[in-house]
Amino acid sequence: MPRTIRQAQPPLEFIPPKLNLFVVKMLQWLLPAIMRSRTAIRRVEATNVEVLVDLLRQFHEGKIRFLLAFRHPSVNDPFSMAYLLGRIVPKVARQQRVALHRPIHAHFMYDRGIPLWAGSFMGWLYSQLGGTPIHRGKVDRVGLRSARDLFANGSLPLAAAPEGATNGHTEIVSPLEPGLSQLAFWCVEDLRKANRTEDVLVVPIGIQYRYITPPWREIDQLLSQLEADTGLVVTAVNPQDAPNERLLYGRLYRLGEHLLSLMEEFYSRFYQQPLSTPPSLEQDNRAAAPTDPGIPLSHEAFAVRLNTLMDAALKVAEQYFNLQPKGSVIDRCRRLEQAGWDYIYREDLKAIEQISPLEHCLADRIAEEANHCLWHMRMVESFVAVTGKYVLEKPSVERFAETTLLMWDMVARIKGENPFDRPKLGRLKAVLTIGQPLSVSDRWHDYEGNRRNAKQAVMTLTQDLQTALEQMAVRE
Image (cartoon, rainbow, N blue to C red; front, side, top):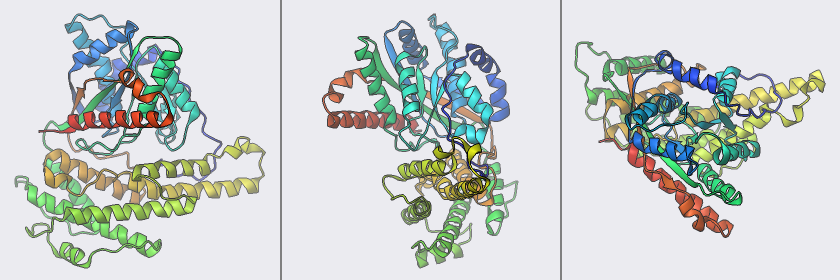
């Protein structure tokens, strides 16, 4: 939610899916032009597409129901998935002489918050494309009921991102949320109650982005911009020089450590959070020049400091909303998001026009404060997958770019700019991999019986899906 919220709102309404095949066809026809204007993606490639073609054939023959569980490293993923279904799958189907129902498309689940920052038109468009919204931070019974019905009875397969949010890393999969696995078991249950024989499958889909031409120069320029924005001495680089990975890594590490130190001081001084920077590490890092080969590469210490900082930022927001810090970082972010929405989109303001002007002003103040408080959570949300050694392990141009862009996100949020208006460093190629389907129906006997069995079966399916996506994220 990058826009500033200064007024309390009535509760968010559910946006029902209203699949419009004309809108689907128009979007598929315009998709290449839209991708060229809105993203840096210039090519989309996919492997094992024949698996998906066969699944779609079986789906339309009434033999199976399936869900496409796709990786979510970037906000560009919906474009990549749309291109896969609308362009690549039909081409492979023609090559195999398999007749598929047109248009080839999927219902999909999306975060109810997207229309809040992307605009009401996006809510209308997602509805027309057959999307169904879900509140990520609470038990959204209406949203879950809609997704459950689409999974079991929709005219198209269902698609969803089990990570729940982007993490900015092509080669790191965030911990998966168990809701998707639970939804799959509910589909089996619904089919059995209706005496239907379709098998239920979950299909993992990997998504990676690679630069067509390595944008080393653009990364260097963006680092220079970030150095200037954060008060560091801008490193002078001769444009004629070849990219020096060690120099770039030194600058990247120095920038990351500087941002970390600034934010530690910020939360320690103004929010009384118990943060401290190890004196020796801070002194060594501040003293080291970006060309100094002795720059400490103690990524373990960096990761510990980053995790401590994220914990402190979340505690600031949790204290405001009177929440206890429970669960993983992602769990805490989701609970905070919902708490903020409860203060902004008020259930008790369904008839907002009937309250007094003074009550309205008080509600507006609470909404504005809640929106400001969510800023702490948004900062953390961008760094949930950061390990401190991602670039060091494999200094590829993609990892350099992803990490630099995450730091740009942080600086943009601090400056009050739109973090979704990211710089485009170079032209991208999207690479999608269709994995082998995971049968949910075959696991039904492990699920039924009691709550303990059901919980374990959901956890096992989630872990198997996590493993499948991680294997596809590995790049040699």
